[in-house]
Image (tube, rainbow, N blue to C red; front, side, top):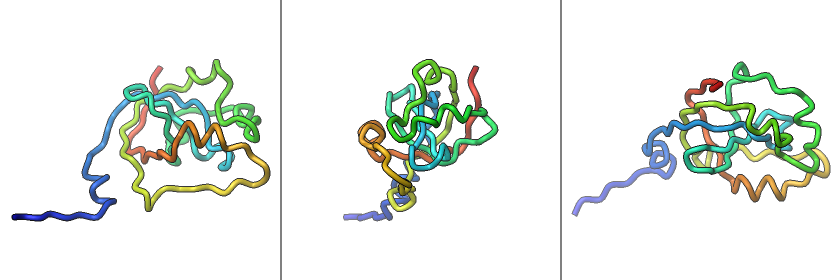
Length: 127
């Protein structure tokens, strides 16, 4: 009998990269817009990323004003920022868990993202 073993992080990375289109629909309310929420089109998953290239889109500061109550962009804006991303799931040991400054409602954010984070290896804007 042969047995093979690997670290949990290596197993996640060995799954490979996935490419899909997504919409940037919101943000992590504890990061002042530095972490963004994406709705992946191929799976309908909602995930967080901390490394979407800043030069893809310029986000208006008004999109982040309701951070104490809502992590989502206003409804019309959720279909405006479309991207094609190549990514892999963030290994548990590399996930970022931000600490909120003040009284921020995270219930909807946590329910939508369920702790799912991705690391983007390539991204491009889709018009």
